Image: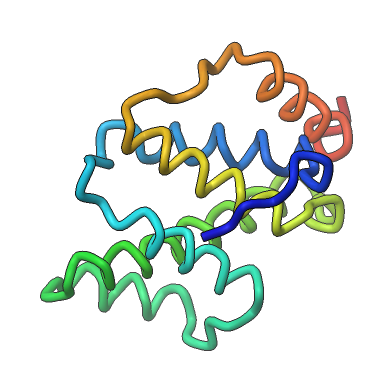
Length: 141
């Protein structure tokens, strides 16, 4: 799906997306979950390819009747939109500090790790440092 070189990953964007994805989806992803579809949905959101309002997507998704891969795709869209909204809640300019390919990589890696049952600890040094870096920029700390 996405495979950025380590040198191209923005730590604060990756770490925050990884941690938020694990927190949101832990216990909800099994080995049959369509991780690639989920990550594609998130990626398409950040690339501006989703033209339908998120609320409309949520309504259709909750009505049911979708194939698992379609459900995963639109769940990825909704997750990506929620992350972007939450960054904006930290402060109005927070999103300008975010590298969307790194966010997408963080989401994808978190979903793969959840699928494998081997997520990085919330005390993982890389995740902690990246999250703290983002809070310094966006949280005024």
